[in-house]
Image (tube, rainbow, N blue to C red; front, top):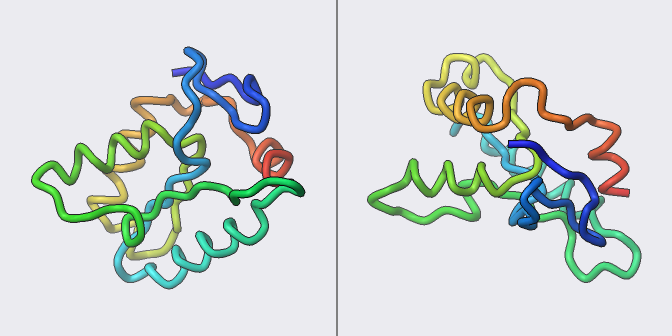
Length: 126
């Protein structure tokens, strides 16, 4: 899936014109929950543009996901609708099958050469 940055005013879109539901998806382990919550909080604070009513939209399972028979389906749906993947890297995350599965899904859907960079993220957040 290719991504077209800044095709719509104020919000990036997928190549086929859909607006991303989330600016970022945070992948982390239970052990790293405080770090993931801090990242989400920071992105909400710094991600607001002048004149913009809402900050960056960040998906984190602790705040955006409820119990469901199709939990993995809901996770992949959120990932597919996110512009960036943020992985909290720790020894626990490196050993986590769930984090590995999320990263594998992202790479299958987007590929390792997805056109995204820290510079682009900083420009978008500024």
